[in-house]
Length: 114
Image 1 (cartoon, helix red, strand yellow):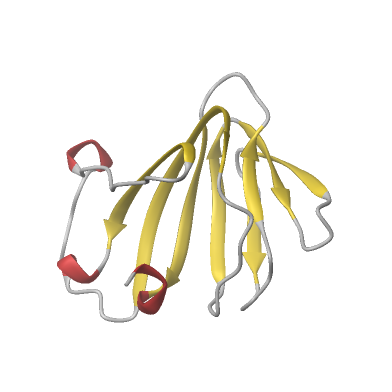
Image 2 (image 1 turned 90 degrees about the vertical axis):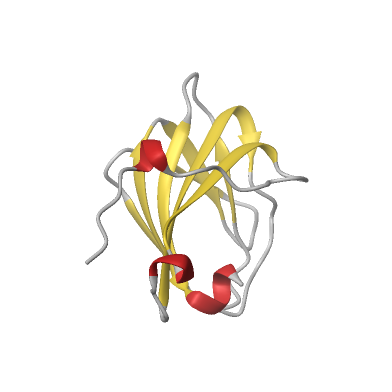
């Protein structure tokens, strides 16, 4: 059994991302061979790149206001408590539209955090 607190987990290098921080909450270093739980914090004015992957994402919005950007570049408002499922190869991005950090948990298969 692994028990951790996010305050004790270091932030990953996010070079190339605008005002985005990421922590790997549970992953390979903890012995998780199949899934990785990540925590993203997007500062006001920040965004993740508009991109796609060959694996699904499970996302839970934890704090703040933002949007999910879909393949047609439509923006879908998001707030704390909402859930997002992204299919394999679905083009997407997330953007903070509020005045406080926009935080979310993102769970991917291990190959998504190689």
